[in-house]
Every structure is written in structure tokens, then in C-alpha cells.
Length: 231
Image (tube, rainbow, N blue to C red):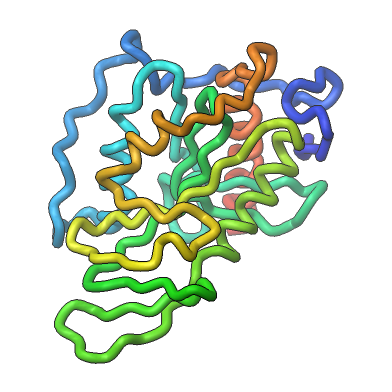
């Protein structure tokens, strides 16, 4: 069944779809993780920025659940792909989603090198490594907004969503982050930002991390299956 918009979100027994077992990815009792070294700049991994963030999220403590990248979309395998047909017929690809006691962390990852500047109006400009001229780049705020809105339509209004733009290249130099409405965080500070986020907004009744994860993963399976059928 399609995911339905409901103000009660995943805690509404009438609208909650039947779920597959949740794969645990957090806590000291999880299976031994696959050996993974810190990513190196210039590696052949294809998405070095996302790999860098994957490595940071692997070390989050118990109480955090990272959504598994097991969907297949138009651009390949190993992604988070969500869709809510009751809200929009357009699926959205997410870089990373983490569920914790504070809510859902919606992480958009960029892998810019060189220098990045955000002016007082929120405009982004970039000086690429070895270049002499600053060029405008798209502010990812609209992309983050789309993802935020889709998440809210799936989980309901009472689950907080914390948006983050993560800059994953270790050699990037940034100025003007204070002008961004969405926090812009370097990858090496991402883990401490998440665990130190001091608004524990979920009540004990809402802090059902597995329940929220199952709801999102169910939406992900639906989107993935549909795209596979469409080819």
C-alpha cells in the first residue's frame, strides 16, 4: 500500500504498513562492522564524500540508527530513495538519514574542494583549487527543503527533522557559514554535532527509533520497487 500522509505519522496503527524486520546498525551489540578505513582524497570509490560521511556515522553511539542504503534507483544501487505517493509522485534520493533521540537528521553531503564563501544573502560562491576566479554555485537549500518536506509527509508533524549540509572534502576552506539557515558542518565535526545537538524533542512515547526507521525503510522499498519496474 502507498504511504499515506497522517498527522500521527508512524504511530498511527491504522496507517502503519506491515514492515520487514529492521536491520540494527547501532549500539554495542550490533554485528561486527565490515572493515573500513578512513577515506582518502582522490580514491576510486566513486562517491568519496558520501563514503567519508558513512565512516563518521559508523561511530555514532547506541541510541542512533543510520538508515541502510539498500534501494535501487535510476542512477544505480546503494542509495536511500523515498517516495510518498499521497504527497508527490516524485521520489527523492537522500545522502544520509540518522534517527536519534533528537529526531531525524537529514544530511545533504557536498564534496567541494578549494574555497567556499556564503554571503549575507545566502549566495554561494566557490574558488576551485588552482583557479583564479570565484564562480557561483547552487545553494543546496532548495534540495534540503524538498527532502525535509517529503520526510515530514511520511513521518508526521510531531517528529523533528534536523537538516544539515555536510562539507566532506578535508581540504575545503569555508567562510560565511553563519549566513546559512541550514547548518553547514565540516565532516570531521559531524559526529560531535549530532551527538551534541541539545534539543531532545522526542518524548519517551515518540522515541521509538526502530518504529521510525521501519516507516522510512518501508517507504524506501516502495520507491525502489517502483523504479525497478519502470526500468
